[in-house]
Amino acid sequence: MTRSHDAHRHIGRLPAYGFYGGPPVNPDTTARESVGQLFADLDREGTERALVLPNYGVPDPDVAFALNHLALEAAQKDDRVRCGLWVSPKASDAARNDAALALAGEEGVAALKTSFLLGGGVDDPDCAAELERIFSTAAALDLVVHVHTSPGAASDVDQVGRLVERYGATTRIHLVHLGGGMSGHLKLVGGRFFDWIERGLKVYTDTSWAIGFAPTWLCREVQRRGIGHDRVLFATDSPWGRPRRRARPARCRHRRPRADVRALPRELRGPLRNLTSLPPHQPTAAHRGARHDHHRDHHHAHRRRDRRADQGEHGEVDG
Ligand SMILES: [Zn+2]
Image (cartoon, rainbow, N blue to C red; front, side, top):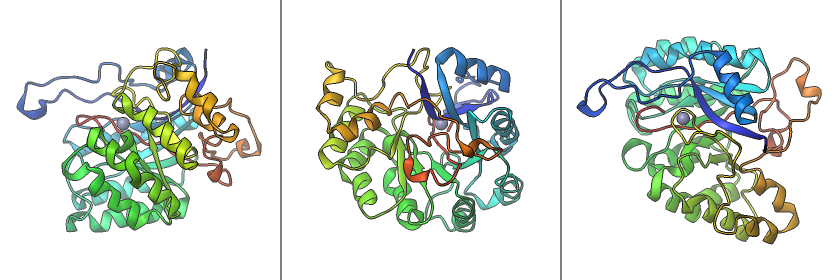
Protein backbone atom coordinates (compact mmCIF):
# COMPACT_ATOMS: atom_id res chain seq x y z
CA MET A 1 0.00 0.00 0.00
CA THR A 2 1.24 3.44 -0.84
CA ARG A 3 1.64 5.50 2.27
CA SER A 4 0.79 9.14 2.11
CA HIS A 5 0.39 12.35 3.99
CA ASP A 6 -2.98 14.02 4.24
CA ALA A 7 -2.65 17.79 4.28
CA HIS A 8 -6.18 18.44 5.41
CA ARG A 9 -8.92 16.44 7.05
CA HIS A 10 -11.39 17.05 9.86
CA ILE A 11 -12.35 15.60 13.19
CA GLY A 12 -15.67 15.87 14.99
CA ARG A 13 -19.26 15.34 13.94
CA LEU A 14 -21.62 18.21 13.24
CA PRO A 15 -25.12 18.37 14.67
CA ALA A 16 -28.05 17.90 12.32
CA TYR A 17 -28.92 21.08 10.48
CA GLY A 18 -31.45 22.17 7.88
CA PHE A 19 -29.08 23.45 5.22
CA TYR A 20 -30.54 25.76 2.60
CA GLY A 21 -33.98 25.65 4.14
CA GLY A 22 -34.26 21.87 4.01
CA PRO A 23 -34.95 19.44 6.82
CA PRO A 24 -32.28 18.74 9.42
CA VAL A 25 -29.68 16.38 7.94
CA ASN A 26 -26.35 14.79 8.88
CA PRO A 27 -24.35 14.70 5.65
CA ASP A 28 -20.96 14.05 7.30
CA THR A 29 -21.57 10.33 7.54
CA THR A 30 -17.91 9.37 7.89
CA ALA A 31 -17.09 12.03 10.49
CA ARG A 32 -15.06 10.80 13.44
CA GLU A 33 -15.87 11.81 16.94
CA SER A 34 -12.88 10.45 18.78
CA VAL A 35 -9.12 10.47 18.49
CA GLY A 36 -9.15 6.67 18.51
CA GLN A 37 -11.45 6.54 15.49
CA LEU A 38 -9.26 9.03 13.66
CA PHE A 39 -6.11 7.01 14.17
CA ALA A 40 -7.93 3.82 13.16
CA ASP A 41 -8.84 5.52 9.88
CA LEU A 42 -5.26 6.63 9.31
CA ASP A 43 -3.99 3.11 9.94
CA ARG A 44 -6.55 1.51 7.65
CA GLU A 45 -5.85 3.96 4.84
CA GLY A 46 -2.10 3.82 5.17
CA THR A 47 -2.01 7.52 5.89
CA GLU A 48 1.29 8.10 7.56
CA ARG A 49 0.84 11.68 8.64
CA ALA A 50 -2.09 14.08 8.69
CA LEU A 51 -3.08 17.61 9.52
CA VAL A 52 -6.40 17.54 11.35
CA LEU A 53 -8.83 20.44 11.66
CA PRO A 54 -12.12 20.86 13.51
CA ASN A 55 -15.17 20.00 11.48
CA TYR A 56 -17.32 23.02 10.69
CA GLY A 57 -20.18 24.18 8.54
CA VAL A 58 -23.28 24.69 10.64
CA PRO A 59 -24.07 28.31 11.53
CA ASP A 60 -23.45 27.90 15.23
CA PRO A 61 -20.01 29.30 15.94
CA ASP A 62 -19.59 27.29 19.11
CA VAL A 63 -19.65 23.99 17.21
CA ALA A 64 -16.35 24.38 15.38
CA PHE A 65 -14.65 26.24 18.23
CA ALA A 66 -15.63 23.45 20.62
CA LEU A 67 -13.81 20.93 18.41
CA ASN A 68 -10.46 22.70 18.74
CA HIS A 69 -9.73 20.67 21.83
CA LEU A 70 -10.45 17.40 20.03
CA ALA A 71 -8.08 18.32 17.19
CA LEU A 72 -5.44 19.32 19.70
CA GLU A 73 -5.91 16.07 21.60
CA ALA A 74 -5.22 14.14 18.39
CA ALA A 75 -2.06 16.11 17.70
CA GLN A 76 -0.75 15.66 21.20
CA LYS A 77 -1.40 11.93 21.19
CA ASP A 78 1.10 11.17 18.43
CA ASP A 79 3.21 13.49 16.33
CA ARG A 80 2.12 11.76 13.14
CA VAL A 81 -0.83 14.11 13.49
CA ARG A 82 -0.59 17.88 13.67
CA CYS A 83 -3.62 20.07 14.09
CA GLY A 84 -5.07 23.35 13.01
CA LEU A 85 -7.28 25.47 15.24
CA TRP A 86 -10.54 26.90 14.02
CA VAL A 87 -10.69 30.70 14.13
CA SER A 88 -13.33 33.03 12.75
CA PRO A 89 -12.95 36.22 10.73
CA LYS A 90 -16.07 37.74 12.31
CA ALA A 91 -15.95 40.40 14.99
CA SER A 92 -18.79 38.67 16.82
CA ASP A 93 -16.43 35.74 17.41
CA ALA A 94 -13.62 37.82 18.91
CA ALA A 95 -13.96 36.30 22.36
CA ARG A 96 -14.06 32.79 20.86
CA ASN A 97 -10.91 33.62 18.92
CA ASP A 98 -9.31 34.72 22.18
CA ALA A 99 -9.77 31.23 23.55
CA ALA A 100 -8.64 29.54 20.34
CA LEU A 101 -5.55 31.67 19.86
CA ALA A 102 -4.56 31.06 23.45
CA LEU A 103 -3.91 27.47 22.31
CA ALA A 104 -1.91 28.47 19.24
CA GLY A 105 1.42 27.97 20.95
CA GLU A 106 0.58 24.49 22.19
CA GLU A 107 2.59 21.47 21.11
CA GLY A 108 1.05 19.97 18.00
CA VAL A 109 -0.53 23.11 16.57
CA ALA A 110 0.63 23.74 13.02
CA ALA A 111 -2.16 25.80 11.49
CA LEU A 112 -5.07 28.14 11.93
CA LYS A 113 -8.14 27.47 9.88
CA THR A 114 -10.71 30.03 8.84
CA SER A 115 -13.47 30.36 6.28
CA PHE A 116 -16.01 32.83 5.05
CA LEU A 117 -18.62 30.11 4.61
CA LEU A 118 -20.32 31.19 7.81
CA GLY A 119 -20.25 34.88 7.06
CA GLY A 120 -17.91 37.79 6.66
CA GLY A 121 -15.60 38.69 3.82
CA VAL A 122 -12.02 39.63 3.09
CA ASP A 123 -12.83 43.32 2.78
CA ASP A 124 -15.72 43.37 5.23
CA PRO A 125 -14.88 46.03 7.85
CA ASP A 126 -16.44 43.74 10.42
CA CYS A 127 -13.66 41.22 9.74
CA ALA A 128 -10.66 43.53 9.57
CA ALA A 129 -9.52 43.24 13.16
CA GLU A 130 -9.91 39.47 13.46
CA LEU A 131 -8.23 38.78 10.12
CA GLU A 132 -5.32 40.94 11.13
CA ARG A 133 -5.06 39.09 14.39
CA ILE A 134 -5.28 35.66 12.75
CA PHE A 135 -2.57 36.36 10.22
CA SER A 136 -0.24 38.19 12.56
CA THR A 137 -0.50 35.39 15.11
CA ALA A 138 0.23 32.82 12.44
CA ALA A 139 3.26 34.75 11.26
CA ALA A 140 4.58 35.15 14.80
CA LEU A 141 4.20 31.44 15.58
CA ASP A 142 5.10 30.14 12.11
CA LEU A 143 1.68 28.62 11.58
CA VAL A 144 -0.02 28.14 8.24
CA VAL A 145 -3.41 29.77 7.69
CA HIS A 146 -5.86 27.52 5.87
CA VAL A 147 -8.62 29.29 3.97
CA HIS A 148 -11.55 27.67 2.23
CA THR A 149 -12.17 28.44 -1.43
CA SER A 150 -15.34 27.89 -3.42
CA PRO A 151 -16.68 29.55 -6.55
CA GLY A 152 -18.47 32.85 -6.20
CA ALA A 153 -19.24 35.07 -3.24
CA ALA A 154 -16.94 35.55 -0.28
CA SER A 155 -14.88 32.38 -0.72
CA ASP A 156 -14.12 32.94 -4.42
CA VAL A 157 -10.42 33.04 -5.13
CA ASP A 158 -10.98 36.58 -6.39
CA GLN A 159 -11.73 37.46 -2.76
CA VAL A 160 -9.56 35.01 -0.86
CA GLY A 161 -6.65 35.80 -3.14
CA ARG A 162 -6.57 39.24 -1.60
CA LEU A 163 -5.41 37.60 1.60
CA VAL A 164 -2.49 36.15 -0.32
CA GLU A 165 -1.67 39.61 -1.63
CA ARG A 166 -2.07 41.18 1.78
CA TYR A 167 -0.41 38.63 4.05
CA GLY A 168 1.42 36.13 1.84
CA ALA A 169 4.79 37.83 2.13
CA THR A 170 4.94 37.06 5.82
CA THR A 171 2.43 34.27 6.44
CA ARG A 172 2.08 30.89 4.76
CA ILE A 173 -1.40 30.58 3.29
CA HIS A 174 -2.97 27.32 2.18
CA LEU A 175 -5.82 27.82 -0.29
CA VAL A 176 -7.96 24.76 0.09
CA HIS A 177 -9.58 23.03 -2.91
CA LEU A 178 -7.27 24.33 -5.62
CA GLY A 179 -9.10 27.63 -5.82
CA GLY A 180 -12.59 26.18 -5.58
CA GLY A 181 -14.38 24.64 -8.55
CA MET A 182 -14.03 25.29 -12.26
CA SER A 183 -13.60 29.04 -12.05
CA GLY A 184 -11.14 28.73 -9.19
CA HIS A 185 -9.05 26.14 -11.01
CA LEU A 186 -8.93 28.29 -14.13
CA LYS A 187 -7.91 31.36 -12.16
CA LEU A 188 -5.36 29.62 -9.97
CA VAL A 189 -3.73 27.09 -12.27
CA GLY A 190 -4.12 29.42 -15.22
CA GLY A 191 -1.68 31.84 -13.68
CA ARG A 192 -2.33 33.35 -10.28
CA PHE A 193 -0.85 30.51 -8.26
CA PHE A 194 2.40 30.62 -10.17
CA ASP A 195 2.49 34.40 -10.30
CA TRP A 196 2.24 34.54 -6.52
CA ILE A 197 5.02 32.01 -6.11
CA GLU A 198 7.26 33.94 -8.47
CA ARG A 199 6.60 37.07 -6.46
CA GLY A 200 7.82 35.30 -3.36
CA LEU A 201 4.45 34.92 -1.68
CA LYS A 202 4.03 31.91 0.58
CA VAL A 203 1.00 30.29 -1.02
CA TYR A 204 0.06 26.61 -1.03
CA THR A 205 -2.91 24.62 -2.23
CA ASP A 206 -4.33 21.11 -2.15
CA THR A 207 -6.24 19.06 -4.65
CA SER A 208 -9.19 18.09 -2.47
CA TRP A 209 -12.48 18.61 -4.32
CA ALA A 210 -10.62 19.31 -7.51
CA ILE A 211 -12.55 18.69 -10.72
CA GLY A 212 -11.13 15.80 -12.74
CA PHE A 213 -9.03 17.70 -15.23
CA ALA A 214 -7.47 20.04 -12.72
CA PRO A 215 -4.77 17.95 -10.99
CA THR A 216 -3.43 16.74 -14.33
CA TRP A 217 -3.41 20.26 -15.70
CA LEU A 218 -1.71 21.47 -12.55
CA CYS A 219 0.99 18.83 -12.97
CA ARG A 220 1.57 19.88 -16.53
CA GLU A 221 1.83 23.54 -15.56
CA VAL A 222 4.28 22.70 -12.80
CA GLN A 223 6.30 20.75 -15.32
CA ARG A 224 6.14 23.48 -17.93
CA ARG A 225 6.96 26.31 -15.57
CA GLY A 226 9.40 24.44 -13.36
CA ILE A 227 7.97 25.88 -10.15
CA GLY A 228 5.20 25.03 -7.74
CA HIS A 229 6.05 21.37 -7.13
CA ASP A 230 6.71 22.16 -3.49
CA ARG A 231 3.49 24.15 -3.05
CA VAL A 232 0.88 21.51 -3.83
CA LEU A 233 -0.42 19.10 -1.22
CA PHE A 234 -2.55 16.02 -1.31
CA ALA A 235 -5.56 16.23 0.99
CA THR A 236 -8.64 14.09 1.52
CA ASP A 237 -10.80 16.68 3.27
CA SER A 238 -12.39 13.77 5.09
CA PRO A 239 -15.31 13.50 5.87
CA TRP A 240 -16.25 15.92 3.08
CA GLY A 241 -13.90 14.83 0.38
CA ARG A 242 -13.48 11.58 -1.42
CA PRO A 243 -12.89 8.73 1.02
CA ARG A 244 -9.43 7.33 0.87
CA ARG A 245 -9.85 3.65 1.56
CA ARG A 246 -6.54 2.82 0.06
CA ALA A 247 -3.79 5.09 -0.99
CA ARG A 248 -4.58 5.95 -4.52
CA PRO A 249 -3.17 8.65 -6.72
CA ALA A 250 -5.58 11.53 -7.05
CA ARG A 251 -3.17 13.69 -8.85
CA CYS A 252 -1.55 13.11 -12.15
CA ARG A 253 -3.99 10.41 -13.12
CA HIS A 254 -5.16 10.21 -16.63
CA ARG A 255 -5.16 7.38 -19.11
CA ARG A 256 -1.47 7.00 -18.84
CA PRO A 257 -0.87 8.23 -15.32
CA ARG A 258 2.76 7.32 -15.09
CA ALA A 259 3.67 8.90 -18.34
CA ASP A 260 3.50 12.35 -16.84
CA VAL A 261 5.92 11.56 -14.10
CA ARG A 262 8.39 9.82 -16.37
CA ALA A 263 8.38 12.77 -18.70
CA LEU A 264 9.34 15.13 -15.97
CA PRO A 265 12.81 16.44 -15.34
CA ARG A 266 14.41 14.18 -12.76
CA GLU A 267 14.24 16.81 -10.04
CA LEU A 268 10.48 17.05 -10.35
CA ARG A 269 9.61 13.39 -10.37
CA GLY A 270 9.68 12.90 -6.66
CA PRO A 271 7.78 16.03 -5.74
CA LEU A 272 5.02 15.32 -8.20
CA ARG A 273 4.62 11.80 -6.97
CA ASN A 274 4.24 13.39 -3.62
CA LEU A 275 0.99 14.93 -4.64
CA THR A 276 -0.47 11.65 -3.67
CA SER A 277 2.16 9.75 -1.83
CA LEU A 278 4.72 11.49 0.22
CA PRO A 279 7.99 9.95 1.26
CA PRO A 280 8.04 7.99 4.49
CA HIS A 281 8.35 10.11 7.51
CA GLN A 282 11.94 10.19 8.70
CA PRO A 283 12.28 10.94 12.39
CA THR A 284 14.76 13.67 12.99
CA ALA A 285 15.88 15.92 15.74
CA ALA A 286 12.68 17.80 15.20
CA HIS A 287 10.90 15.00 16.97
CA ARG A 288 12.53 15.69 20.23
CA GLY A 289 9.44 16.98 21.82
CA ALA A 290 8.98 19.63 19.25
CA ARG A 291 6.31 20.15 16.76
CA HIS A 292 7.25 19.34 13.32
CA ASP A 293 5.92 19.83 9.97
CA HIS A 294 3.92 16.92 8.86
CA HIS A 295 4.67 17.93 5.35
CA ARG A 296 8.26 18.40 6.04
CA ASP A 297 9.37 16.18 3.22
CA HIS A 298 7.04 17.99 0.96
CA HIS A 299 7.68 21.53 1.84
CA HIS A 300 11.33 21.55 2.23
CA ALA A 301 11.13 25.28 2.31
CA HIS A 302 9.64 24.96 5.75
CA ARG A 303 12.00 22.51 7.22
CA ARG A 304 13.60 24.96 9.49
CA ARG A 305 10.49 24.94 11.58
CA ASP A 306 8.72 21.93 12.82
CA ARG A 307 5.30 23.14 12.25
CA ARG A 308 3.05 23.02 9.46
CA ALA A 309 -0.42 23.01 8.53
CA ASP A 310 -2.71 21.95 6.00
CA GLN A 311 -5.95 23.23 5.51
CA GLY A 312 -8.60 22.15 3.46
CA GLU A 313 -11.97 22.83 3.25
CA HIS A 314 -14.81 20.97 2.69
CA GLY A 315 -17.85 21.86 1.21
CA GLU A 316 -20.34 24.46 1.36
CA VAL A 317 -21.65 22.64 4.32
CA ASP A 318 -18.67 21.91 6.28
CA GLY A 319 -15.58 23.69 5.80
ZN1 LIG B 1 -12.10 20.80 4.88
